Amino acid sequence: MRQDAGDYKELKENFVSGATGSTVTHVNLISSAALASVFLYHTILSRTSPTSLNKFPISWAILVLPLLLSMTLFANMPALLSILMLIPALGLSFLSRRESGTPLPSNESERGTASPKATVAPLPFLTTYRAHMLLMTILAILAVDFPVFPRSLAKCESFGVSLMDLGVGAFVFSQGVISAIPLVKNPTYLASPVLSKLVTTIRKVLPIMVLGIVRVLLVKGTEYPEHETEYGTHWNFFITMALLPVMEIFLHPIILRVPISMLGILIALCQQLGLSVFGLQEVVLFAPRVGILSANKEGIVSLLGYLAVHLLGLSIGTMILPPSPSYFRRFQRQFNKNGELTLGGGEKYKHSYASRQNDKTATELWAYSMLWWVFMGLTRLLKIDGKEGVSRRVVNLSYILWVAAYNTSFILGYLLMDLYFYPSPSRSKYTRQQSDQDVLPSRIAVSAPLFEAINKNGLVLFLLANVFTGLINLTIPTMFTSNFWAMIILCGYSLGVCATAWVLRNTRVWKI
Image (cartoon, rainbow, N blue to C red):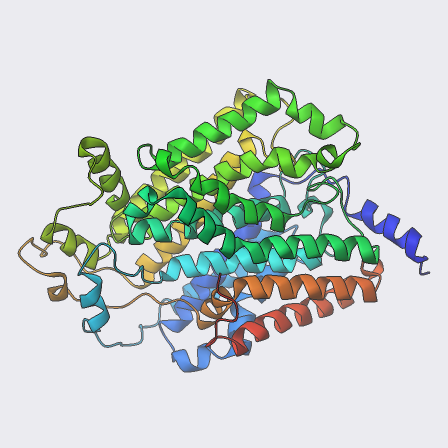
């Protein structure tokens, strides 16, 4: 029996409230379906014609449907889903690979060697990571409204780990990774006047801030069910995402001199200090909402923690975007040594820039992922952030480290698959006297065209997904929907979002 609007709104808010979460292992197993689907895709791609595999329905079935299944029907047995995808992949691996010609150096690669300021080339493993992160978020924001989505994966009320808690942090971490592009293109950007960078950045994020304000007005105006303890009464995730790049600008003079990962950890410790010593955690959890600041206490208090996540993502971005993971660090060392704002090195650097050192990048990613996992374990073991555990609501130290460890590990996973399916040429015969054009790769790493399409218009798709989610929730009582019809709706929803990306794959609708 349908409830009236007021009763249903209250029931719906209770339905998505009070969650205590799952475990880190469970979340990792659910996410492993993403790795397994990519492994299956590239196994098939290396043995069949790309033309047939890259048709939209097939790409959706291999790359998107498993993500949806992992958080719904297979949520309580995620390892089984990964095994079901790995079995055919391993079976196909016994077949010989499709022959492919050796690509010759292009004019673009030659231009890429001219200067450290060359355009940052798209990286297939990063494209895959960002597409999966966005898809998991898009799928979860609607799936959470149906009973087929386990409550253990919904956002935790105050403490705990869940898939949706992780998705929020992953979005911020990914934004940090991409924010490294101007620093990698031209490290002297850090020393540019703050005011000019601030104006440019505000112009870029202003549309996101406007979206955040519009969302508040729509939610309040339509009596749409909302979860006030997520960000506050008027705050939302769009506002947080808009503020972080602006806050980063003010840290550029420090980034010139201090390792970004160290700066991120220092800010994370400051966040925890504020929560534990200065009582901000108690304010968030128990203070009444009596004014504009206290009404939005979650969004305000968590902002510094999200800045730490953003900076840890920025650190990974400066490592994986250049061909050499040490490129940005060498710039920092030279600046600290003699104050020069150029990398120097001339021809020596040109050679290293033309050929990616993905093996070294993978080694550093492994080291950082292990470091963040160990730090998180020690934080919990020593109860540095209290006995309650991980908290997205206040973005405490263990949450920051968890997000960094998870995202670094999965970026590493996608990179390792690129190295497996598209191995780099052996360096044993590569001497300093040879140019990079003399060393030809046997295969060039590629990402799925569907993932490229999703990345090209990611923000537009995220907005579209929010609109679809709102319309579906205003149209049907999702919390009373059977699993069968929920899956039909979720499949249609994901097909609609992905089809939009596919149709727009040659057009960037909104560039910010």
